[in-house]
Image 1 (cartoon, helix red, strand yellow):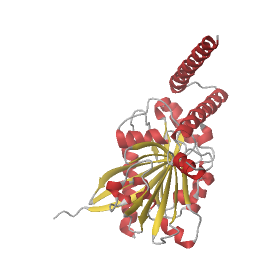
Image 2 (image 1 turned 135 degrees about the vertical axis):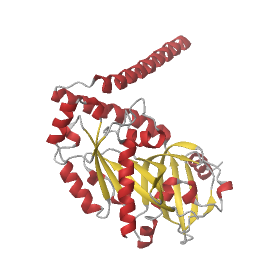
Image 3 (image 1 turned 180 degrees about the vertical axis):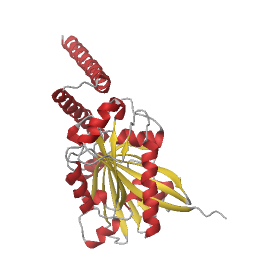
Image 4 (image 1 turned 60 degrees about the horizontal axis):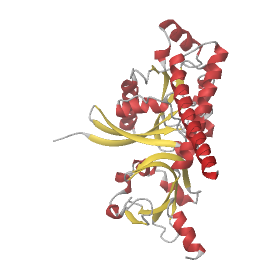
Length: 169
Length: 171
C-alpha cells in the first residue's frame, strides 16, 4: 500500500462525498460512511431534512460565493447518527451538480460538548451566585451527573494505572 | 376534493447558551424534556408538520448553538428563515439585557422574517418573580414558556406558524 492509498483508507473512515443535481436528485456517492446505493435517483431533499432546509440557499454558490460550510451538525444520515461537518460546493467537473462533503466528527464533538456544557453550566451558576439566587433543581442534577461520570472515569483510569503497574512488575 | 395546501418553512431558534432552545424543540417535536443538559455545538435540524386552516406546514426547525451576540451566527444560516424564535431565560438577565439590540440587529439582517420572543423557564419563578422579571426586560416576551412542563410550547410554535401562513397568503 503506497502513501496515497494509506491516506485514502484513513480518510474513508471519516469522509464521504455525495453528488446531487440541481433538482436534488442524488447521482453519485462514494459510500464510505453510509451506503447510499439505494438512494441513487432519489431526492436528497426528501431524504435529508438538512439538505432540504438549505435548498433555497444553494443558488448563492452560482454567484461565486464561498462554499457553504456547517460545522458540528448533529444529524442522522441514512441511519448513521452523530456529529458531522458539512460542506456544499458546486461540483468542479459537473457544474450542474452540487458536491456534498460529509465529515464524521462525532468523537471530537462529543468531548467538546462535554467541556462546553460544563463551561455553560459554570457560567450560569456564576450568574445565579451574583444574583444571590439558587435554582437547585436546575444545577444539582447536571453537576451531580457530571461528577458521577468524572468519578467513574477517574476510577477507570486508576484501575488501568494500577493494572499497568502490576503488568509492569 | 382535498383543498389542503402544503408548504415548507424554515424557522430557527436563537438566543444565548442554555436558555432552553433544544428543550423547547424536543418538547414540541417529541413531547420529551431532555433529562440532562447537552449543549448544542453547531446546529441540529428537526422537522414537524402542523396544520393551520387550509395549510399543512412542514416546519423545518434549525436549533442553532447558543450565542450571546447573534451577529456571530453566519448570515447564510439565517437565509431562507421565514420565522425566528428568540429565546431568553427568564431567570438570567444576561440572556435578555440586550434583547432590544439583538432583535434590531436581527431584523436588519433578515428583514422579511417573523419574530417571536419567548421567555423560557417560567417554572422556576413564582408569579411575583415572573412579573418582576418581565418588567425589567427591555422588550416584553410574546410568550412565556416552560420547556420542562410543556407550558405554551405547542402554542408558541403554532403562533409562529400562524404568522407564517399570513405572510405566505399576503405574498
